[in-house]
Length: 241
Image (tube, rainbow, N blue to C red):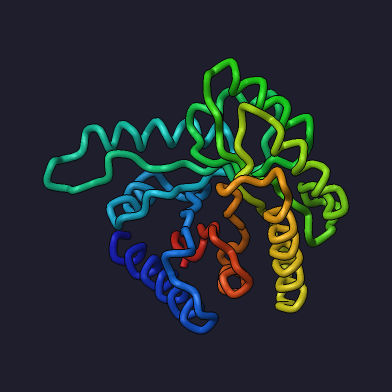
């Protein structure tokens, strides 16, 4: 398992570097979030041994469980293992309002804020916990009915509401491309997200911290990097080959 994960991580990193060289970007501009949602605990530990500290989960119950397991692993590790002191957890899946309180103490970044009611719940709960979480606004650039995300036409209005909330910090956008082999359709979703990102970055209310564009998964992260992603979310390409 160790060698397989090491090799797959290297392949992903090499592809990121290759794309960046092609489009005149620095690999350091792209943060790799390793999605552990389908990985065994030992596999998650192995990516940490390989130097990865940005980990993503899409379900609150799983996030709570594995973050606790990983915390215990880091605290009890051998001094010679040279592990990081902590990892950063990303909540990348749909978040229900009644699960917000459980996520806030764990997640360093919530990728999936897509309604005003959810944002208001985060703002309220964070205020009570004396926290100010970083969040991304999820935008449905593919316009698929089954996908979560604010419609593109309503995105500016929702972003303005989020910018005004005192107990959360809107730091960028997230989107998901359709599951298709049509690369043009995938690219169109990422281009639209980037255009919206640039538009919102120019808004008077936007702060300097509004700089993250989370898009691209195992099947399409190379296109996402070409189109300006600053965060990619990769799981199966690392754990399943």
